Length: 332
Image 1 (tube, rainbow, N blue to C red):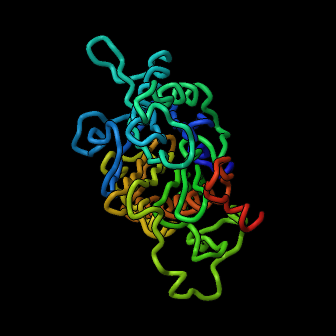
Image 2: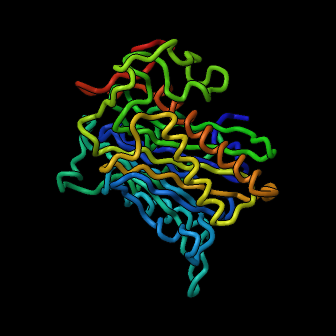
C-alpha cells in the first residue's frame, strides 16, 4: 500500500498550484460514480453541492470531490473539474445531457503572503483552471505537504499542507483519507515537535517522535492563529466498501473524531471544517453494525494520521514572515 487515499480502489488524485498567489487545488476523481455524503461541523463553512449529499436527497452518486484554497473565490474550482469530466463524457444523465456531480469545500489562504490580485477585484481567480489541470493529471501517486489545496495552508505555529494516509481495516476493506490542513490551532503539542496524532502513527510516517513524557498546562493551552476564524481544515475519507448514503454520512461524522485527535482546537465558530465520505463499492458491504463501526473508527484514525503527515511533509512559503515548516524547526 502507498499509504495514500488512492489505496482505496477506484480513486485517483491530482494537484495544481499557483505559486505566486500561494494557493492551489486538489481533485479526487472516482473511476465510476460513487456513493457519498458529508458532515459539516465548522461554524462558517465554504462549500458547494453539499446539500445533495444528505441521505434524503435524490442524487446518490458523485464523480469527484474538490478541495481548494482561495476562500470563496476558490469555489469556482468545481467548474474546472466539471469541465474536465464533461469532456470525458461523465455525469448524471438528465434531459439529454450529462451533469458531472462535483461537491467542493474551500479554505482561507488569502493572508499567507501570496499575491492575489483577483481578491482585489483585478482579473479572474485561478482556481477553475487549476482544477482542470489537477483533474487531467490525477494519478495514484501525488505530492503531500505544500501541494494542491494545502499549498498556501498554515496552522497557528507551522506551515500546514496536504496530507493522506490509508489502512486496511479489520473487516478487510481499505479506508483512506485526504486532508488540507489550514487549522486555527495546532497539530503539535506546545512548542515541541510532538504531534497530537502521535498515538495513531504507523511506523515513522510523521517522524516517530511519540508524545512528550508529560504535558504542562502551557502545552494544553489553546493557541489561535489570528483569532478563532478565517481558517478551515477540509477532508475526504473513502473506503472500497459498499455503503448506503446514510452509512457514508455516519462515516463522515465519525471521521471528524480524527480532526479532534490531531488538531487543537477544531470546529471553531468561524471555521469551516468539513469532511466528505465516499464509498467506491469495490468490496463487500459491512456485515453488521459492528463492521460499520470498524470502518468508521478506521476513518477517524486514518484522518488523524493524514493531518500530521500534512504538517510533517510541508515546506515553508518563500515570503517574509511565512510560517516555518515542521522540518525547518525540528529536522527530519
